[in-house]
Amino acid sequence: MARFVAYGSVRLDAVVPAGMNDEAVKVLTEGIPPVPYGTPVAEAFPEGSFARRLVDLPEVAGALRSLVGPGPTVDHHAVHVRDPRGGEAQPLHGDAIIDTRVDAFDVQLMYYPHDVTLEMGGTLSVPGSHFRRTNESDTGRYQNLRGQTRLVCPAGTVVLLHHGLWHGGRRNDSDTARYMFKIRFNPTVRQVRLWDTGDLADPEVAEILSTRFPWYEAATARLEYYNRIRMWRALTGDDTFDIEYWMTRVSNRPRRVAS
Ligand SMILES: O=C(O)CCC(=O)C(=O)O
Ligand SMILES: [Fe+2]
Image (cartoon, rainbow, N blue to C red; front, top):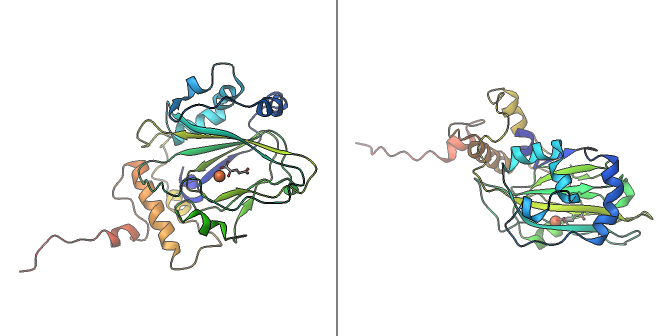
């Protein structure tokens, strides 16, 4: 969970079995019926449907349970195809720049049914960018950022993204269409200690939350650390958690009146 807070995503390689990956392209091409915002998963994806089997896979269900909790609803879902020799990349963007919640977050599931090679237009993302909710056209001006990752993955990979993470489908320079199925989940419970918290006191937590990415500048990176601490406090319910006193410093508002 600390890694998710620092990086803004979690990647589950090849968790979807080959049989389902084989079915996927046909199912995704035919289309998954759209649902209105806020539809419970069980209603959005009927028992036995492809999407339901996908979200019920133990690794996927476990990660979703830890991140958004039980009974999430579907915000929207979409199939994204990067056409062979498509000629263009999608501009870098965050999906939710107006969403500045601290104590709740949405999760975007991205599922890749086939191997994605470097040429195939895998989703580019910028680790640690999810707290920078800048205007979409400002974000889109960046062509490449140090530390960005362009997804190369085996068939059946699922990536779960924080709603603020900067990302974009890359240009597909191969002869094969690249498929990706995305589902955005909204929580319906408070996102507090929903995961296995047995190792909360492990010093590695603070170390992971202090991860530095190559695009960070020395001073403004504190904005990232500060926002991670804020998110970690919300996730754990521990209002005393801090690293290097970053949050303590900026919340120091003495009430005592000098005599
Ligand atoms: O096609 C892609 O890799 C990314 C599409 C996208 O931006 C999204 O699903 O939010
Ligand atoms: Fe997007």
